[in-house]
Image (cartoon, rainbow, N blue to C red; front, side, top):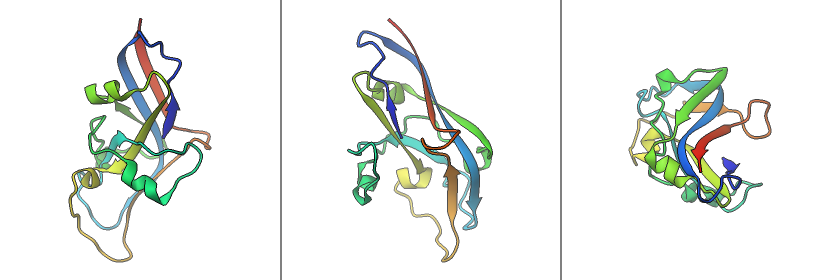
Length: 142
């Protein structure tokens, strides 16, 4: 997810920020724990803002920028709000784009969850082209 945060003045102090993702549906037919299937938000250092490349997977960070939302706590057909932590606030780019990635918590932790062929864990999250696009609301003062 890319957000143009260049309008925040250079001398501004960022007080808080909330990322809102609209989750249409979710599924966990593998049976991962709610913590493994949690949504984690990390940095994204992908280069293109218009196309996803197979190399983009390697361009996501391992530092959590929010508190994860556990699978059982994710609400479908609604926005789910992620409040950025201190690392997340420091990551906001006042000179350009703030790039974020949504990942499974178990992936961020380099864990090895259970696998079962023909089963899945997924979230259907609306993208920038949808009516309920991702939002990043930043509160700051100069």
